[in-house]
Image (cartoon, rainbow, N blue to C red; front, side, top):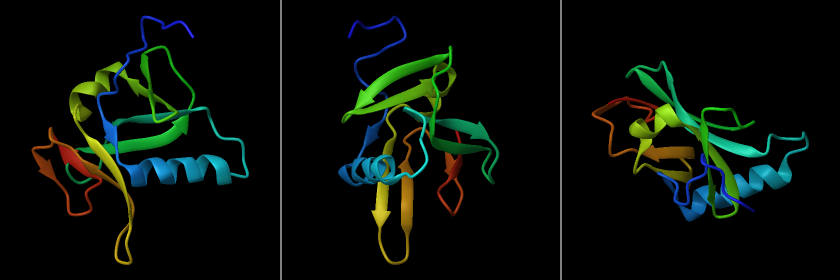
Length: 118
């Protein structure tokens, strides 16, 4: 597959084994047809100013494309500076279950860990 000018070899974020496992479960167990790409990014909102975005979506013109453990990942080019070096995990615990974001660029985070400021 030839690389386009918008395709980078190494993703600016990392996924833990638990996150990859859960994403593959979602893709394989979904009854509805889901979009082909996993979108990672940020959006305005949340108690600290920015919230994380993690959803299956279609590729758009301003997206960079990556592949992480066989999962096609897209990210708006403008979001890279907010998530560079971030690690996405999935917790299976009794008290906490869901995706978590360890972002070295966050200067402040809220209690739920789903929003931040940079």
